[in-house]
Length: 115
Image 1 (cartoon, helix red, strand yellow):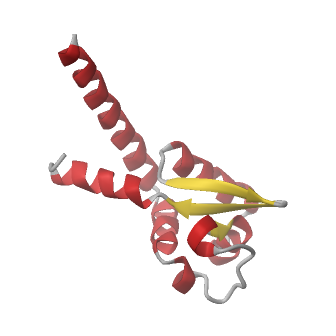
Image 2 (cartoon, helix red, strand yellow):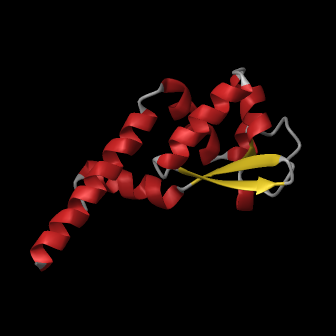
C-alpha cells in the first residue's frame, strides 16, 4: 500500500509538472514569469502599489507592460496560478501576483531529473 501512495504522489508531481509546462508553453506567460523573477527591475517605471517583495506586481502593471487587455492578462495569470507558478494577493481593488520560486525550482529539478 505504501508503494501505491508513493506512485500516486509521483503521478501527482508529474501531472503538476505537465500543467506547469503547459502554462509556460505560451510565450507571453513565459515572458511574464521572467518579469516576475526580478519585479523591481522589470517594473521599475511603475510606482508599486504594495511591497513587491511580499506581494509581487499589480495586475495593472502587468497589463501596462504587456500591452494586452486586462481580461487577457487576468486569464493568463489565472492559468499560471492554477499551475502553481504564481500566487495572488488581493490588496484593496488590486490583485498582485508573485512568482512561486519554490515551485519553479521544483519544476526545474524535475526536468533535470534530480528529484
